[in-house]
Image (tube, rainbow, N blue to C red):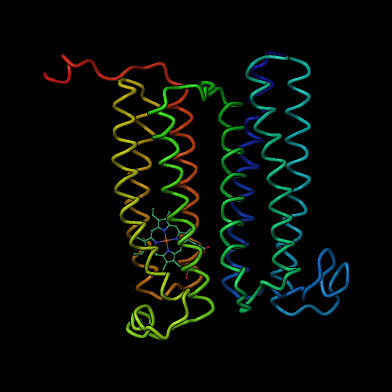
Length: 323
Ligand code: HEM
């Protein structure tokens, strides 16, 4: 069997693993938003002290389902890693080595994802409990999830035949990629703080919610949540311009320009969706849609950056720019 054929079956599996992981993440948001994070009590690995909960409440079912999905994820990821290793051992090519590296990194970050989840439960940072450490747990969880999704997307991309990328490019391009990553992380972390404060301090009306944002007696989390829409709009505009400029630096590369258009479109939709989420006081279905779009923006940026770093195209020549 040729390397391409071996990798094409693997690529389909890698895309499936990426989608499965996004579903686990969405279920995690449903779990948080439905305040079911304490559904298994402060027990981990067991649920309410039992392997299989015998008299589950609704929130126990939600929390237990998340744990089963995460455990299955461990197995699914192990298969991904084992398969990548088998292909690499048989081929020892640059592409199979790249696939193995990213699959290995993804496996590592699924383990740390489980560790963060366990940490949340064992420290009691679930449901409506608010400790000083919880916003940091939320941020760490989000960053870990993003890194995991990034490595899965890169694994699928390389297996599907995407041009391999190099990190040794000029400092200005490295800075541009880092700035894009940082902008998305800042928006998303402020988003998880907004989500946490909406959950812990719910408001009945929009005017009540806005009053809380500006009241000096409000909890610091409430006063910080305004940061999210502000950073979202500023970073959104920044990323659209950044990727637009980077696409021009890779003039004629259709992959790079396609991903830069996808990002611009997704950011536009996300800003409108975010505004609707805010106006509707964040019903669960909007929270799920908003996080799904955030993951899509992130994965698109990862694909864009990989295509950019893989491209040999050059900026549009000066003489052509003037015509
Ligand atoms: C590129 C733009 C954006 C990104 C990447 C983004 C990302 C996120 C993320 C990751 C969360 C946390 C989701 C969760 O853990 O449940 C969040 C929450 C939230 N975002 Fe955004 N967001 C963006 C734009 C906006 C805008 C423009 C607004 C409002 C005008 C907005 C309003 C909200 C609200 C209200 C929440 C809290 C929802 C809840 O109660 O769970 N977002 N956002």
